[in-house]
Image 1 (cartoon, one colour):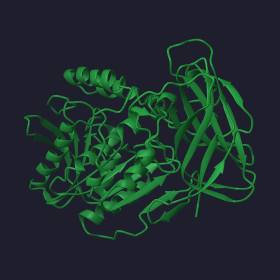
Image 2 (tube, rainbow, N blue to C red; image 1 turned 120 degrees about the horizontal axis):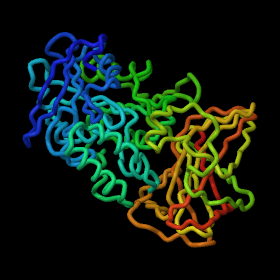
Image 3 (tube, helix red, strand yellow; image 1 turned 90 degrees about the vertical axis):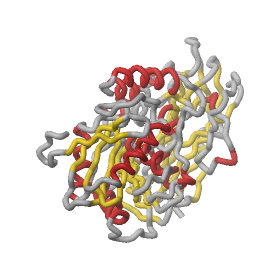
Image 4 (cartoon, rainbow, N blue to C red; image 1 turned 45 degrees about the horizontal axis):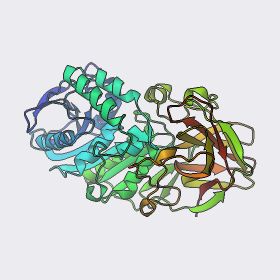
Length: 478
């Protein structure tokens, strides 16, 4: 990134940490000095080309930009303590306070960035570092168990560890990071202290949450926005897990920075902007909309399908635009699996769906001690085009639900114990399917697609039967 002709030459900074480690950073001056400083802290290397678009957008707005390597990566030293560790969050807070004291900074800082560089903002902000005025996490998880490593209790995002730690450039981080990731995080079946989550009751720093309708962290983005205690704003567009800044993201980001770093603009009561899926149209809302609910019972007669050996053994999904490098490389994006059975709900009048989708699957399994249920919601347009919209997943042994923490279409699974899967008897799986914002016309249909894969050690044939009583909760608009 330093050789990018569209960016000014960066100043290299070495920032001391309280335990003796040093964080390596690049500072891009944005104009007048002193000025507010906008910070990104990354495990993907501060020189990476993917940072250039963000740096350019913030520089164009007249702010200094600092991009820093997390400890143990790139030029930053110090022992590595694990993914998003408490020590790493402390480093972020110390870095922000160090910057606030420099001559080039006017004492005000902000944090920005997507994905990993989004959740580390939340973990730093709850520490209330001096000088931090706002954060802007986009396409970011908020619960590392439920959003990242064990979605529905199923290991996911597993390729991330090898790609990230093997590129850390530091031998000890490669060894310790890979051991921690694969021996502890991925191999740990239940929710433990290894899985860090932000305390949103303590998040009073103004936060701009940005998500995409087809981003695999969308659930976390919406939950984070709803739970955050301070001033907040939410933008959800027609994106997958894509780190670039399009026009909408750039405008929202710069407006948010100007509001909290320069006191320019106002904090609108309509603090939610949502794109309509597949359309160049946006709606504004005061808070996350509360839907009315429609119950759809898709299974009229018992429907039996084979339990697939893995997602690699099911038919390919219908063609849908997909960011292949992102979704396939992480092994956890949407649109990566086919459907063993589908059920359609015809639409006979103009319909708008906005909110979470809930699936209560009643099924019986024979020949398999545990299974993973993968569910997808698609739209079948009147002309026959299939558009995959959203998904949900759950491992059957993790089906226990905490009723007090659950909401309609959003069951809360504690993921703290395994429940045996009875053979040949009805069992209920409550699956949280990610939110949607759809406009449907007469002649369209909503499609539920399901695939069941085995999650036990047997190789013998197995079947699953979907039973009447299976319900899909669809979110209508009020």
